[in-house]
Amino acid sequence: METPGTNVAVLGLGAMGQALAAAFLGAGHRTTVWNRTTGKAKSLVEGGAHEAATVEQAVAAAPLVVVCLLDNAVVTDVLAGTDVAGRTVVNLTNGTPRQARELAESFACRGAEYVDGGIMAVPPGIGTDQALLLYSGSQPAFDRYRDTLAVLGTPQFLGTEPGLAALSDLALLTGMYGLFGGALQAFALAGSGGVAARDFVPMLQQWLAAMATNLPRFAEEIDTGDYATGVVSNLAMQAAAFPNLIHVSREQGLRPDLLMPLHALMTERVAGGHGAEDFTGIVELIRTPEE
Ligand code: FVH
Image (tube, rainbow, N blue to C red; front, side, top):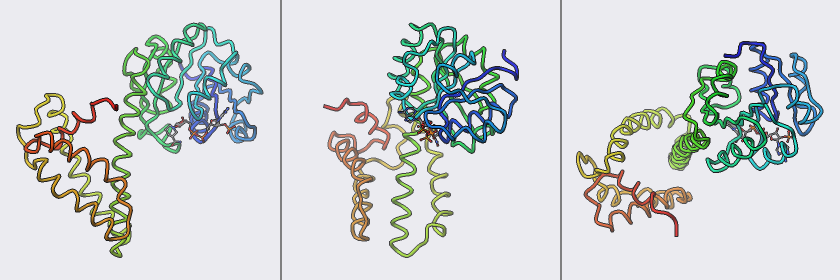
């Protein structure tokens, strides 16, 4: 286990990279930072960080290299040609499982251990109890740096398959964007009737929290593939009511775009003879590969 005093290099000083570097610094780790454009390291350097002039210098300065750049194409470009042998690369850049697997393979060929990560937090949440960080990839590397990484937020290691963290990260973000998209449509709809978002939010929050209690039942139905037992509100009934959500948006002068794909799936599932089942059966259509 590493203790405070670990040398850490942070590549990328966007909003998130700065927060990560500040957390390492705050915990007493010797922190070297690098960013493509200069100027973003100023407050970190004032706090004791060392600013490397090149990626090569940053990587040479620390056995643990934490990467947080815009996307994985940038990660590949930025580290191309740099000697990473003997280093542990922890990549917290948002990406897909396939990208994580490709990066793991590529870094292994170059003599580095690779851990992929997903940050379930916004920059101000880094270093607080609110931050969850998902990891997958090299177990020995994760175990070695677990305590160092814990200063960023609660670390959760999902397994040695490098893509696992990215898969869960993107699944959680998928759920979040469904929630956010629905909430925006709801705010716009309430607003079209003169209700300010701040006045509507208590009711919306209460409703969404109550609806979220359905998720364990959804999970059970999805895991068992039994969408027909214990149905409270069948899909046919829901599919009959759903067009009203679309009509009211149009009547109120709003775009119903966000609602259309779900309506199409509900209609298809009912047409397939599953109207008596639960809403959850739609997952079967989602699982059908695109043509
Ligand atoms: N910020 C957030 O809320 C989320 C939370 C969850 C995780 N995401 C992911 O974290 C990655 C970095 O996000 P960020 O917030 O730091 O993003 P930016 O502030 O836009 O900084 C981007 C950094 O990437 C550098 N960069 C961009 N293009 C290049 C390039 N071609 N070559 C080298 N570096 C590049 C950029 O450098 P510069 O523009 O300052 O020179 C920044 O360091 C990201 O995957 C999120 O999805 C954040």
